[in-house]
Image 1 (cartoon, rainbow, N blue to C red):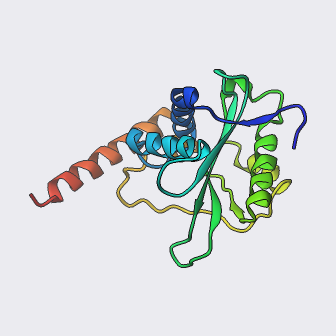
Image 2: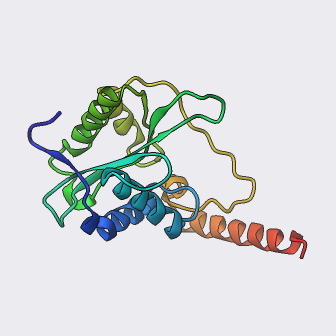
Length: 196
């Protein structure tokens, strides 16, 4: 693990700061609309789990930065695939606040921390990237720490998936307006097809 960036466990008083970081992460990488309720429930599950109580699957959040100033964070949850009884760790997010992306190293420190948690718990860890911004650079970073075992693909016939991940490749104002019009049209079609 990087000696320059020490990863520590998130504390309860950082609950809102963690949520704010997830909102920033979602703004950059989220595919579907953000559910504040679900995000807060996941954060609370991790905080409760780290305090030794709570229900549901154990979870943990590692953070970098002094108390009250989270520079980067990574969330890990103990879960099972839908096709197996085997347990593993799955990463919900690995996010570095834009103000702390230079100098580099925080994301690497968090990836190494995730590997340490994995080794201590004797559970494999699944970590992924959903992004169209600097994706190849992120893949190279992750490949320096963990094995590359797949890829994600998306087909959205509704036009409702709207965010920076998909919009990253759309550069002109005309293209963005056309996309917005298609999304509005798709929403209208869905609203019209709903049975009351």
